[in-house]
Length: 284
Image (tube, rainbow, N blue to C red; front, side):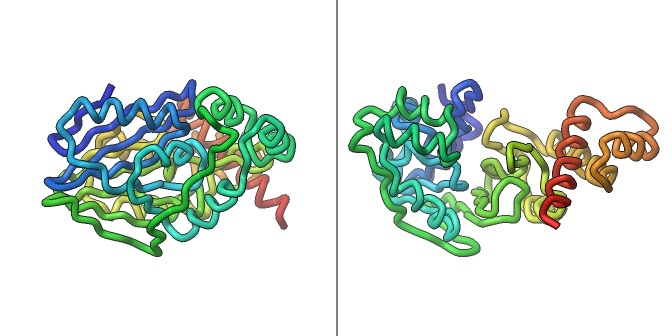
């Protein structure tokens, strides 16, 4: 079911049990723009079915926020202009060379090119997958891009991120709404989930320059400005506390600064920053 944020903005909520991210729809007077293409043919078709129930202008553009499979494997279904940044284009080209028969999928899982969960989604939710091939992108941009859907401007920009090097956001100025994709999340390297300490403050700086009241994240419910401020405060305070590979030291530093124990979210962030310290040590 589509969630209505305003007369112009809708979104389909994430489903974490199916690795389905939030999908967005921005409607202008002439055209509509979709944010992310879904994790499968079925996901995209369900989104299109929901859109058909409202009086939305034709979908002209689909913006892919980054090159993780759950955000683009359904994009062929929209029959629209696919927009990606230059690095996302390069990374998605790898998937354009994939085959999706059983044998190939198992090979990709064994060689860590694909997760087993991704393989199961493809098997269950992409019909005719033996002949499935990811379409090429139509527009590859560097930096930023501005689109007018008809009295509805969307700014598309690549930002610095703790999640990927190719994160793109979509900002709708007159609605004070920003679609962040997965950009504020951490990432997994060598089976270790971590938050990149070096990218945290640059990312927050890039996002906070937008005058936004509504924030839509890839795998969360919608957040308002107060909720995002809490999120940023927790992240930055945990980042300050982590100066080594010791979680105990990080907790001690945190408690010294705040005169309380970390809450559940903060413990998660502390561990993620400690993991980043460990990964950085391995690369030295």
